[in-house]
Amino acid sequence: MKIRQILLLLVMLLMAFSATADNGQLRLHLIWSNDVHGHVAPEEARFMNPAFPPPLGGGASVATYVKAVRQMAADNGEAVLILDAGDTFQGTPVGTKTEGRAMSAYFNHIGYDAIVPGNHDFDLGKHVAERMATESNMPWVCANLRDESTGEIVDWCQPTLMLDKGGMKIGIIGIITPGTVHMAFPDNIAGLIFDPMKPAIEKYRDELRAQGADLIVLLIHEGLPYDADAGWKQIASEEAQTSQDAQGSGYGFVHGGGMNLMELAHVTHGIDFAIGGHTHRGYHEPWIDPVTHTLCFESFGNGSSIGHAIINIDRKNRIVLGYDKPHDRGTLITLFEDEIWPDVEMAEVLRPYIEKTEAAMNIKVGSASVNLTRGGPGSSLMGNFVTDAMLSYFNADFSFQNVGGLRADLPAGDLTIKDIFSVLPFGNELVLVEMDGAMIRKIIERKVRGSSGGLCIAGVHTVFNKNRENWDRVCSLTLNDEPIVPEKTYKVVCTTYLMEGNSGLDFLTTISANKIELTQITTAETVELYLKNNSPVRPKIDDRWVEDPTAEQADYLKN
Image (cartoon, rainbow, N blue to C red; front, side, top):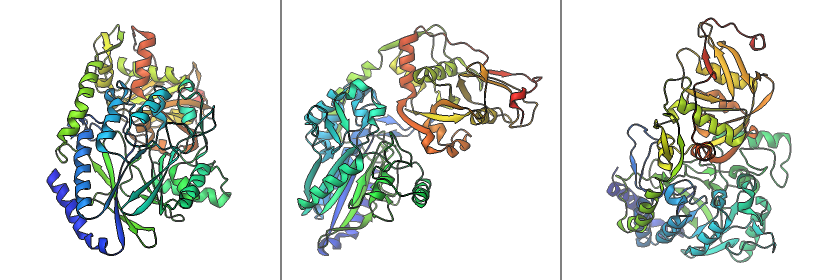
């Protein structure tokens, strides 16, 4: 579908509802982004098709889309609200190497209405987030981020924002996940207080209502669960067992004892709609809480899409009647370059930042004494190198990585940021999991079942015999040089991709959410640090994977 087709659909949609402009209704075009992580340059959508990735237009395609929506909204007497839910710059060279300056230029050119900081906006220190806020043409809002020295909201944010959109007063509350204290380096957030979310929302909700707000919008760097049905079942189950306390602790895919957006929307009344982030979980249709009726939106992030929903508002009663989608695929607009042709002006704004950081990609990180090759489905030099880096970064007991996630071999010699990116282009984030020995064995057994393979591991040593029955082929499995204990809990690190059940590991989705911690650290970041600290690296093929067709099973593994 080309840009002209998309715009035609938008025109038809707007015309179809144009009568509502004379029927006491306001159509508010909500456009949002979350977890952009610096993805504003054109790039390939490898997550869709690694072999033949379609091109994404980045921030310039967003500009094209926003211009079209603004023009059509203006022609039809409708309103537009553009928001970002945090984690703005960290994750790409153009974002990180410019310390967010490219993102500030992007937000300013698009003309966002408000931004809330995310936990990753402190990755280079709080001074970077503060500078970005002060150089932005729009306010940064955050109602639960205070200065320890004054006890007040930090002076580079404001807790709320009141906007007039089509004659309606829209009150916006900004919230950052309190889990930031567990995910950011202490020096980067020194002197900052991250308050609980629910009390802050309720306080400023009431203040905005007192100031005459018709609608309340929550702009929050906290997200929806990966599975909406499972998330809701968990809430319902918890409510059946015990009443929810004021802080909302005790359930959900959460960080630092806080709540996810689904939970928060359920126990906090008076929020008309919410824009979330942080979990990178795209919802093509909003989650609507069955009790509070709050509409919750979130996109996948990483510059792959922009969110767009048309909120229908009853002017007389000041209530949300519902929403419309801009197309039949839902509220998320994938930024395919050939569908939404990049805006020339936006491309020119970003060009100097992109050109400068392309050079930065060639900066040396470290070196290797041997060729880092991927080899076959068992041990490989590249696989051992990457999983050793993951293990070292978190001081974990066991790490694992699918071979398919390693996309290139590297020659011996100096290694650059670009080299690391060529191996790990997907930006996969890592999770820490409390996992028992029985589950670790199941992972190994799955990868030696039949003709399966494709797993890189560190921290364990295994001997397997493929002459034995499936799921009973592991003959020896040691961890930390001791026989694995099925009932013992171990610290395990892997990617979110694998924890979502990919690569044949669907049973990992049965692990309870409270045993999973999102680190917001990518595999590439662990490799970069490992290279800096251990160059020249010289991984070797060792006994972490040993196939022995005559091996007998050790007693501690027998059922």
